[in-house]
Length: 351
Image 1 (cartoon, rainbow, N blue to C red):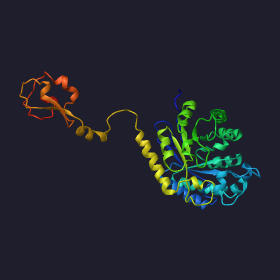
Image 2 (spheres, rainbow, N blue to C red; image 1 turned 180 degrees about the horizontal axis):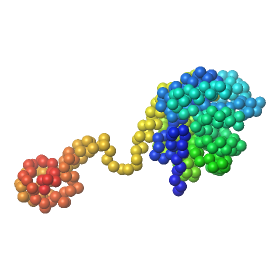
Image 3 (cartoon, one colour; image 1 turned 135 degrees about the horizontal axis):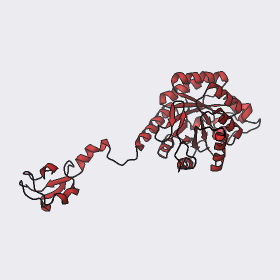
Image 4 (cartoon, helix red, strand yellow; image 1 turned 45 degrees about the vertical axis):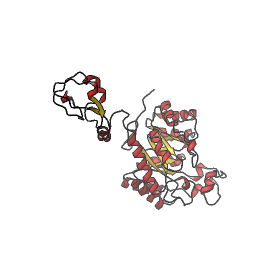
């Protein structure tokens, strides 16, 4: 199997053995208010996320006039509108993005965004984003993917609702101009995604098939599925967050609030640390317990100097600081180097 590639975003390396890259997905949860978006950057930074991600689009370019709302959008948007009218109220302007980019630089958190059209891609490239996140819905928009490929900017491709064949085709477009830094995100395009549809084993499938770093764009409720994805091999994580789930908006209901985002990042780092290096060996925290709870060879009676040890002179008792019971056969027949009192833990210098 080909070795999984390591890619770079800004100053970060993403790949096997590297820390999980955590993307706090602001998306459109700012409701078109740049001041709200700025506050979200602070929340993402304070939670410990590596990046905060927004969505860049022109509502006229991504939705036809009569495109209906998806069912989950109808649940989150308080007035029943078309996609175009809903998206119009969620747009950020060029100056908004320039401001947010600056805030991210000052906050020392990576600024990422998903472009939904060529005009928005051009804007993000002009802003100098360190990577482009490609939403699952754009996976089949090959002209957009080729535009990203021509720019040679690192790309993270989300794969919700996709087949392996569609992913291969999309990667072909991204690699058409020798774009090297490409990551994949396993994703379930449901809002929220049922736990039983998370299919975290697909992370390993994608890594094995494409030899690229694979992460998880998590739309499930709560914290634990996303954090569990780390144990399933995820090298990147993306999670929606909001300042307040009660706000109107299509993604608010499935998003984490600030304290939850902080808990999520903490949980991910704990799972990441818990994975270890895979080498089975005693851990430093086990040594004291091992010494106290394991057993050693202990004399059943006093043994005189020069006397040969026999089986009836020895038993196994705690602590485990002396010769282990597995040494019984080696000790039998050997002579005592000194007087050994009864009920004494046997050590090598006594034989």
